[in-house]
Amino acid sequence: MLTIYDQEIRLKGEPTEDFSKFALGLRNLRRRRCFFWGVILIYVPAIWVSLRLTNSDRQTAKVFAVWFLLVLVSSLLTTAGKCPRCGKLFHLNGFTPLFLRRCLHCGLHITADKKQRKKNL
Image 1 (cartoon, rainbow, N blue to C red):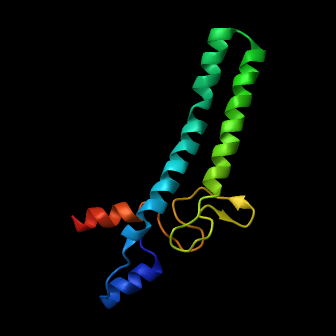
Image 2 (cartoon, rainbow, N blue to C red):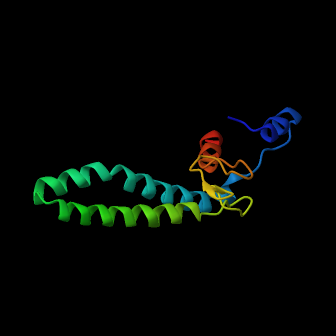
Image 3 (cartoon, rainbow, N blue to C red):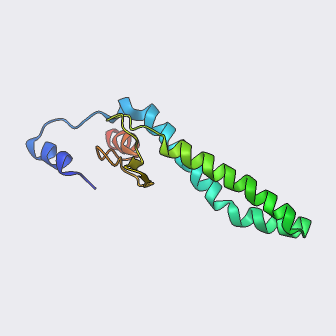
């Protein structure tokens, strides 16, 4: 989906922005996001395996505590990621983190560098 800014540039026939200079920052943001969502997705299997192997609520509570700490750390790391274009926090606008695919300030898409690379091939 193109932003209004991108549509205006294309209508005028001017060259579009070079996103390759943002590749390293976007790759770091994608890596943090993958870790965060991976930790979220591992919750049910981890608890299930813990209950099956230990048959103990106390041991499962320890697994939950470790998982919760991982979610806390990964969410803080993901939220603290800065946008390579505008330099502001990519996922944070105000006090609420929103894990969307676009920067909440400048609208840079998380895969903008990949999309431009595909287009140039």
